[in-house]
Length: 186
Image 1 (cartoon, rainbow, N blue to C red):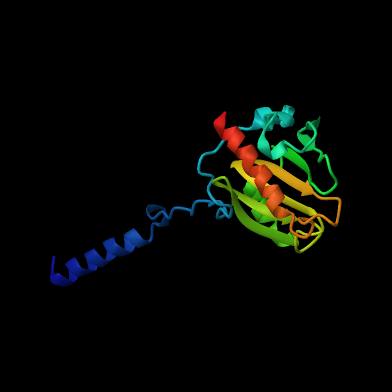
Image 2: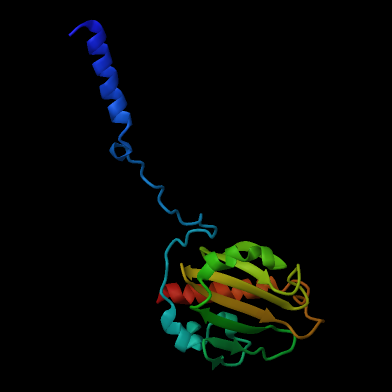
């Protein structure tokens, strides 16, 4: 076979390889999950047992609750009432259903107030569903305990003469910190 014949044969072999699309395969891109928005929870804790007994989150005699009446449970929520109107009422909910911090971060654009914070080393978020600033005696902090569970703490100060009426979040954070400390102690 001459040079032209060999060249023609080589071209036909190459073209034949191109003519078989089944010989080439392209892997379909893998479905990727959306990027995670919420911070990583350093030491996830299972707090689901507290959902049936939320008032046990805080042991009797704890300093943070010394000026409060014993907590009263209503489902997964416990309310500690202040002994004076100048002190906050604290409501704590063990939230197993909302989807945790990640779900909260995903709806942050719809919340008038959304401020990431930290409670005892756990990622948390101050939120308000009505106002753009947590004032007027009420503040809520949501603490991520694991990927799907939040402990939500709300302080409500009824008396406008209270020093903390205009800035209620420190009360909320102190109480939430005490809860997380109790939980991590076991």
